[in-house]
Image 1 (tube, rainbow, N blue to C red):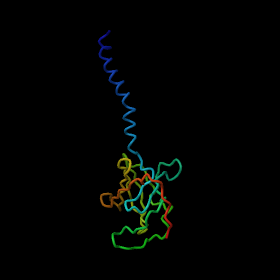
Image 2 (cartoon, rainbow, N blue to C red):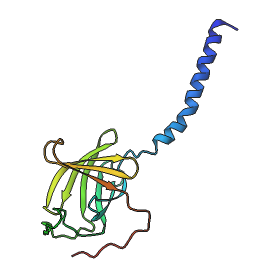
Image 3 (cartoon, helix red, strand yellow):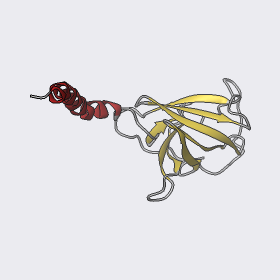
Image 4 (cartoon, rainbow, N blue to C red):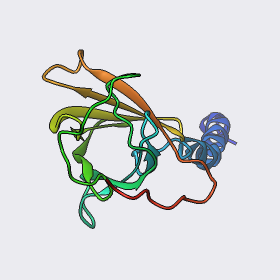
Length: 163
């Protein structure tokens, strides 16, 4: 046995162990979603939104209301109000143009039907069951952050009738 082969064996064994461990670590990393795909319940509990590619095969994501669970105005407790956008929420696209903007982050726009305005927004999955939604005007430093959650595993309830 040559001196080079004696030192090469432990190195090759270490590399073999490293490559053998890669599939296991890749599976663990796969538990974290790369994209905010799927169904989410808004922080207010009013809506269930499904996030999916805007068009088949498109990397751009959109979010459409698939269920109306309540129709509360989000201005604050005891503050009644009317929605500026009178269209029914069910079927409305409220998230549009979301493109991957960084590791585990998507940038796009969110529509607020209460005031009929569109804001810049960032979607960031937090684990597998939470989605951080940060809406802002101009500078991301200022704005509002909500945490949306996955719907409960109980079967979907029927969509609420629209007003």
